[in-house]
Length: 343
Image 1 (cartoon, rainbow, N blue to C red):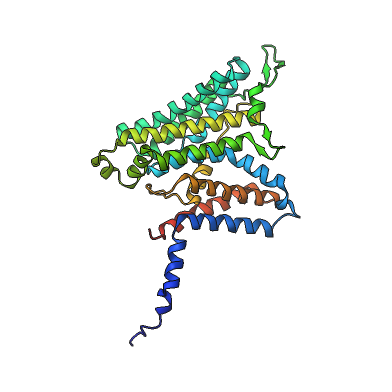
Image 2 (image 1 turned 135 degrees about the horizontal axis):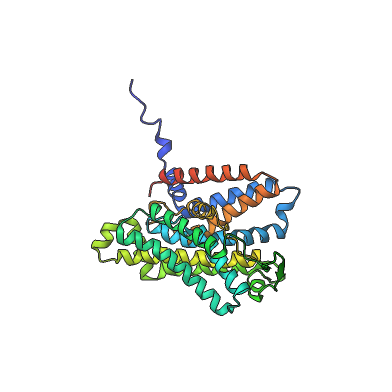
């Protein structure tokens, strides 16, 4: 039986083709996902809690640390890599920063650069293993994740570093909270914007400039698109990979400093599973896990999408177990959505 050639003509009308091209762009998809989540918040608003300014302010504050991690993760994923060590580096630098400022009396103007340098060094170490020995990023950063977590527990003796210092006789001596902790955890503009949120936005701007305006940004895209072609074109592939993982470690250290300041302590267990949240933010934003495509602007949209989703679930008293399962399902859906996209 002959099939009517007119039967499927409507599927290929110019209007339909234009609509497909529009929704094939990562930006439209990211905005659509965010809009969908916001509509859900308006529907399930928990007796108006979603419409209160404090809900949005708290969401931004909570999501900022994950967003800082996601900025570094964006650079790594654009270069066709992955970094599983960001949560452990965050925990290590949170402990190191607390030790320096609370226990050792190191001034903030010195403690902050030293912690950032430590994060850069750990990230670069993982990148060096990948670049020099051609180890898979998953394996190299998994090893760095374990190493950084061990360092955090070693320098803290497995205990939280806080203003309560235990004496030899078992009693506790309480010291004052360093001023830098109050500055980092402060809120500005009448309490509507936190300093950590502004730090996150600065990280977004820095990554945007790097990826769109500087040569090294083009190198990251080139390595992520086709490493061998980039090498033949004269791109310093090893240096580019070191840059990506070094910056990822630096952003992790910055997030660790913010974590310590907001929690008023350095916890060696801090940052566990944070790498999964960072990857989820990047992927849901629309940056391809295959590398070579995406950007930090999409990561910003991904952070808002995940942040609002978690906040909506929280104000509606959805349990943590269900939140985690839903987040995992969303990550899988986002990856499948990317695979089905024609670029």
